[in-house]
Image 1 (tube, rainbow, N blue to C red):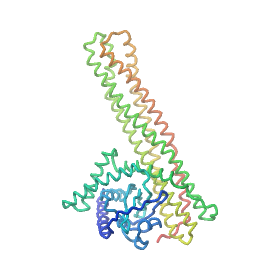
Image 2: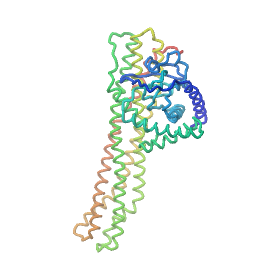
Image 3: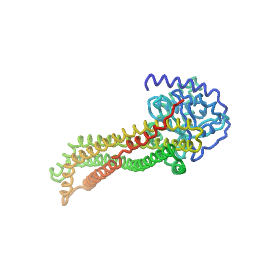
Image 4: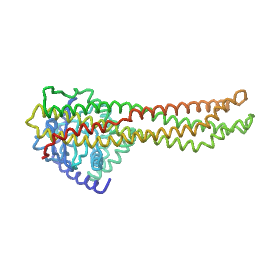
Length: 470
């Protein structure tokens, strides 16, 4: 984190502590977020609320005049570990979106839980869209992580560590706990959970609303937002296919590594036994050639697996961005419907729509960059597979011929077993490279077309409704 960002985090932390000091005590009452409920708010760079939709106001149990101009941290539940917000602010101030499970404390001491997304705006502020947590398994994992984190931070506070220092040390603990849970980073966790939460939200919510009687500018606006949602849905389908292929890439890449290691191990054992064998010495020359090429083959395989990992990471980030754009589009549609149904509040609704459009533009620009990177990584992966297959071709052919020479030669039972294992490994290597080539080619076809440019053109149509922001 840069020095400027660190100072900003410290400043925000001080304001949040003040806001939390004036909270009501938790009562234990829980009010659940509805399946189709969607919250919207924006804050300035310090986390002070500037805009909020009616649903957010209702769930907060504050009056709107109390919310606007107050720190968002006034709703932070004491059961939430500081490390989560430390990581959130670190991400936001570095220009990255944040997504995660959050428990909020309402003005009357009641509790409600959301899956929250927060996105930086070009103004320096932040836009947040929140929904009901839809994936109970992920929500339960978050609760377990937060419980352990809170216990860790509470222990630090008990020995005199400040709240901010405990949150910072808790962030390191958070990374450790995530690793145990199978996630190399908080980013990886977000890339895993957000697409699942949004997909479930859409499946359980009603389709985007229609207003066939609407005319003029608002009718065109609703049509544009609906078209954006349709293009994103198509992209979401592609991303689900890529997620499935990602699993295949990881499996086949690891399989290739295992088979190479098994082949080399078996050949090494055969070579060690060759001295005591009655077979002709030249019978073992192909194994010597393989052993000599082992270092080169291994380096190519390591490079290939590294490229596969980068391709997978890029695809995961792209899926995250598509899911975030879907959520923002759904929120935008809600405000467009409000403009049609309650034109007396047009100024408030228009401001929210423009902020969401801006966030969409920023996210779609990132998506476009990921699509370009995806194409480059796919080409690099194909080249790495071709190179690996090429360097394996000659020693594989030698080993295949070697296996044929074994017919009619008397070998010890152990040598026969090892020879059989080597033959099997050779066959599997060829099959694995062919499968890997097929999976990567399919990845390339699915990810070859980017919808981001088309979406940017659609979002640009929203500009004519631009209104002054106050």
